[in-house]
Image (cartoon, rainbow, N blue to C red; front, side):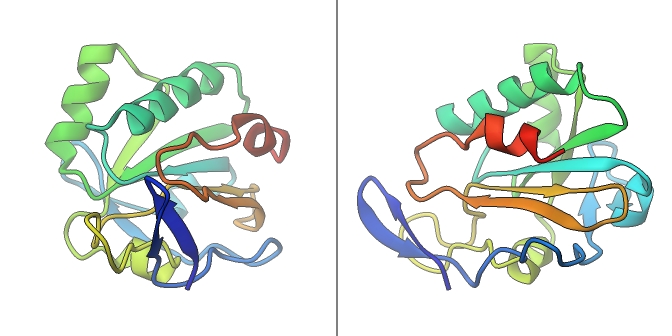
Length: 165
């Protein structure tokens, strides 16, 4: 269980992020068209998993915008923006913002991605949502970088995530 803060107040996650050097566990997440995406859909690609509580908050929206900008310059890399938001909200946000370089994936059905990867917030006002975290994976599905953002209102370290590619 990781201890993070929300407005300086302690809250906790369901576990710890995957260890660097481990294989990312397969997932089933919902795409904007309501089809299912799994890790195998991105085989042979480097991945930046930008995980956050909700697209409808300022910091989360900023992270999607910043990774969208970076993603256009990355070779053989997909940026996956993952939250418990409904796919409709993710699609609406990216459509309104003109963001086309990130892949939105929703864990709304069961929250299994968050639970499996130790990201589910278990107490406080955001209980049930995902914490703000970054997981970077190489072409073979091996985790090369993780960041559990200590204060949920803070942005992740974009440079460190991109440097791990």
